[in-house]
Image 1 (cartoon, rainbow, N blue to C red):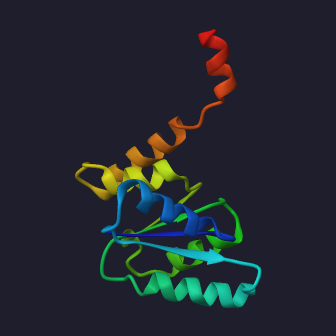
Image 2 (image 1 turned 60 degrees about the horizontal axis):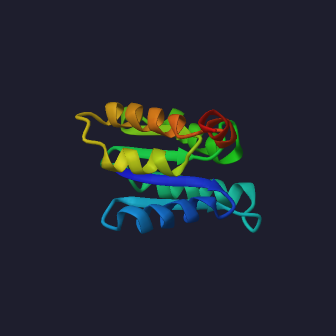
Length: 135
């Protein structure tokens, strides 16, 4: 399994560097940053090349915003793939999503992704309400 984190600005780089800080290197993990310096066409070309380079194994692409330009580029690639079952596209990336996908012991990739999405969502908390309940 290969994981690519793709996002606007430098978010993807920061997430991948944070994952490596927390759980170490040695995972098939890459990133793509769509920055202001890259036009839509250049960004689309670079991201397409990165994704299509990984066509021999399962590929998971995490993007930042559902419906955003990075996600839409990835969606176009997903739709155009003959072996779309090897390409898994998930929006709303965060650290627990990436780390759980990597560390999950689930048997199938689909099960790993389901576990990771549940973990990512359950980690979103409004801490003020938790503090109020404890006081």
